[in-house]
Length: 476
Image (cartoon, rainbow, N blue to C red; front, side):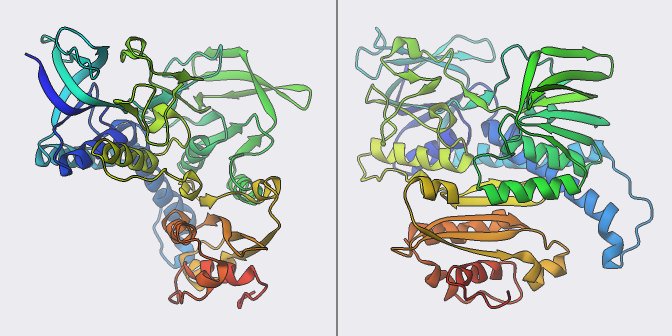
């Protein structure tokens, strides 16, 4: 029997389930169709499990390499990777149960299966059409009749042409999260955010890591100073980098216990060998098998095209999150979902300013940023002034034993507006929101500098960097 809904959401990841909760708050009858587990990639294959592993790696490396610096004598420090994985699974399970509870609280129907848009049919001649759900349990398809649809099907890791993922020796992050044993060595193809997080984590676990990056620097979308500092600090820990390197997929060879591949570096061919390979070259949208061909939705370069309201070419069908491209971040998907639902509900909405979205890298050291880089500011014609302050002059950083890194603030000379804030160092992913709020409020460095930051805290670096914009830093 067909069931009627105000909104049917295809995908129960972070964007999808947050959209569903907001819809329930607004009194809209809502259903989610999810073929995997509620929470999606972020909870089960991305944000949460990888950060759990990163935390274990950090604790292990700190205890093994620096405990004595704090006067703590530990004896031999060993790693039980099975317990590392068990802790990760426990965290994921707890959060998964929490999401399931939120669905029950909001009286949101969850259909476990694959949803496909059929368009108008005998079940629903209205423009909203029908969503057919192929149930995971093999039961007869459920037919849902929505007034509106939100596509929140997310993305998956992509590979390079000719580079076959076997899931064992040549992996993406999906398979790497399931490793039961750590390799002795690994090649990581791609030095972007995900590649660098894995490089940092595996290095802290004691794995010999080599990163091969096509661009001339790692994390190339970040400010050049942050990229340079990140590579310097990770190289100091023992990670090997090959930048401006084009991987030659056709040279890939796997044998029992080793992976070999060649890359072009400055006109020369260099061969790399390790026990395993992790391919981290971006993500592709999940646009297949959801019935897009039965609609007028425009798919451009593999992503669903939407307006500022997240409506597709068919006004009753919306799309959010990784499937529309742009900033493929969980917190972005959540806000896109809320905006889409509020637009459906007839509320006043505002276009999301992606320049005000904070971006984080959870490596060791961490990095975070909001706004534009110094090079982007120059390219956009701004005359800038820059304040930069090192953690080495911050007392709390010395107390923590983590004084590498800095905060950099870029401001417009003409208006004093903050254009971008870039950080690398201890706990900067927890501090970037101050910079994000400053940019939302169109603040100037003066306003940050005149916010009295408590002492001793890591956040003092923000006040000092703001003072440094005008050459007035106190402890430098």
